[in-house]
Image (cartoon, rainbow, N blue to C red):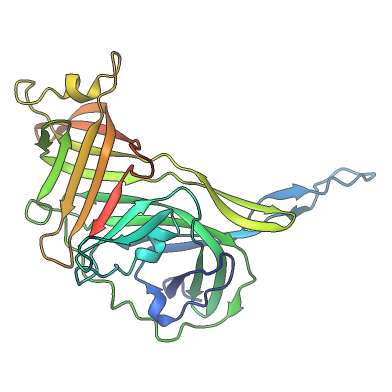
Length: 315
């Protein structure tokens, strides 16, 4: 069996925990796809006996974990959902249309009624079926690189079977564009006013707490909390231009929250916007980047009205 021969299919479940039976049109264009096919909490039998030696253990909550990266790009047509949208939904986002409809899709965080996802992982003739999956995601945009999202899903374990995918189609995944001055025209942070950042990177992670719960009358992968964090590296400026210490980094006499807006892409159908209304910026270090002073800055995303720590708009 060859390690490189692998395909992932994914489809949102209805209702939760029911095999959604993904087909070839539900294929995901992945990178670094890998699986922990049989994991979970084990307990030792701890049997009494007349001699020394180890004890056998029993898996009391078998599950599987799938991890992979997905290139961050649009839907190809403004107003359509991107091919990776089901993955976001199973990580705690909800999808809505912009006004007027047909111009963009908006992804906002939610705190209840998280959808589940069925994953079929085909590995050179062997199919791992993961039911009731929920997960965590992170996103990274770094200068000169392809922007990517990273996902890790936990789902209920089923014994693998011999099977091959039929007609896996990833044509809905459009080509990404690298993070450059031309391709990433907007990155602002601040209070009033917003300030253009000469930045090298931006990243964030949902940090979902994903908990497998196998109890009497229920077997579910639950998302019980999140705490969105991230970071950015941007060029330092003199305080006379922008006093980042007083306006952002210092918290000993009060916290000043920043709004963030980043737009990647310039052509309709391949534009992504990340917006966060209340972010605390923390200084991790003042570093050297090719002879330029940069601020390595941590970001703590906080809600304002709830479920609005970060919003992704695809247009």
